[in-house]
Image (cartoon, rainbow, N blue to C red; front, side, top):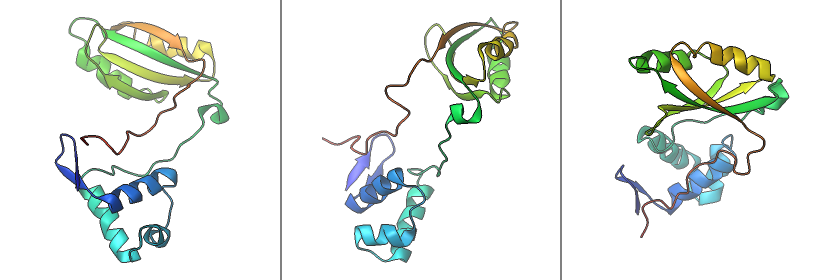
Length: 158
């Protein structure tokens, strides 16, 4: 068994096969997963539940194309709160529906956020809501040569 770094979680080959199959298709049936790993469907269901319970699998998600929903632009915005505004800026970012994700980071900026907007003018409107509490620096995303992906299962292996 292999151990996930910093978690003490032991994954064996069956767990890794199940995770790999769920990465390819999170809607796979337990019957199909069972056939893949040579186990019964109830046993596979218990394995998947265990992976959820210990926090390896945090959920099953839907991947939407923002452009198909009318969001023509995406932007990365570095956000540096003004003195004393850190918590208020964090709360404000959380309330902006167009913010698809945000990381709190070390360094000069405190947050790096990804926004989706239908047009450039919409981005200006979103950032105006932050300007009283933070400095922002924006980069428009042209393409994503490496789309968001999951980490490799081999973490922590020698």
